[in-house]
Image (cartoon, rainbow, N blue to C red; front, side, top):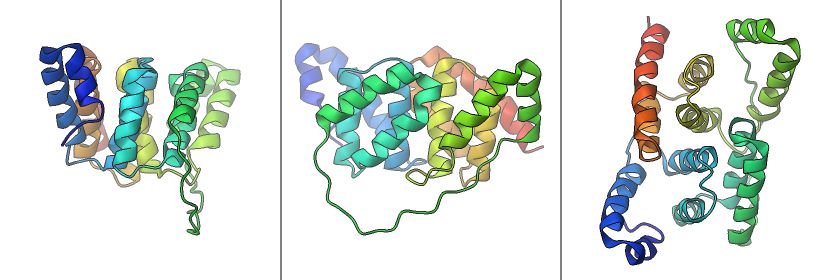
Length: 221
């Protein structure tokens, strides 16, 4: 698999390019995740690490070459805004606009929005923290998770990537793992997300695997 902008990286530093191509092929080649899921995970990682220049452009171009639409990528940015920051999401949308090409119109009927709820334990914990924050969190959650352009599984896996790189490895990760498992993902897909973003921060991935092992053990007990 030839990666987008592979030659440009080689021109900067051949030794580094060899390393970067190796990890890029590894990540894009993960068999547990679909190409769309890997594209959204990379998008989440770019936003969380504010890699909004060359890395984001490269991942977007690679996603487009694999059949992921700009429409889907824009929706992923909307979904990720509260987890990576609205200002960062706005910058990502600017990059997408620069790369965007007109897409063919389709007559396909979009899927219906799904009902996704936050579990009562999480709601109770939020309410104990701060009433206004709990209301804000619920509003942000319900505004996003039922939208039809991305599946709940895709949204959950991308958001798990934000937990890994933000270091939110307690209630936030637990909630998103639960959503992923209840909407068609299995343990191997969740672990693949952590493995994919390890190139952004290997120490954070290490900590995430540690937390994930405990969460998965609890969820299957």
